[in-house]
Length: 294
Image (tube, rainbow, N blue to C red; front, side, top):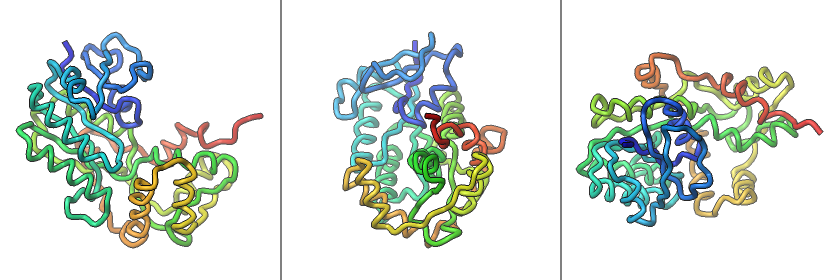
């Protein structure tokens, strides 16, 4: 009988959690909106259909579950989806939720994404459930959005000021997945705790371009662009206007305050190893940042 439920298993973070359980003796259940998109096939992993806007489907997905990993996309519906899941989890008898949140979560923040994160955290904290909250920095996997540009133009453009560009802190999605899996297996040791998850480096965009140059064996250059050009790029990529507006709020904040973000040792404390370096991430995913052969 599965006692652990994992949501978001087709996304980078949910899939990273699920990878920890593949082909182990631990039976887990993963919730999907489309069962045809099951990302990992293993004897100990089952899939169930569930939708945050269909509470009956959530109730079915959580039958017999003791511990759940909760993650949804950072968008305007983020707080309401978390609220629905938490409400049904209480009805279903779930004991503990491990929630993926983010740095800067604050219900009073003027930054939309930070406020959404804070509201979602508050729904869980005020519930009757035991909880653990993970607050990751920006994801290494966010660089996939620049993969085509890096491959074809040998530039990485971003609205983070003239070179060297703003300082940022990132974390690898597999580190997040490893931390979440450890807590899901032994939740009692982590009740009521918040963990800040970062890598081990504070990097400027010029640093990032230099790392890419080393890994890809060709010169990659950081190309500063305006907020308006960056915003139009998101819209052209199909990002909804409301989400684009929320993301664009982060750029001036990062330019002004990015260097003040502290590195956390929580990944190392929980996993007994150093966080994954950005260089390692780019090396492992080098094919995605390289020009495809004709």
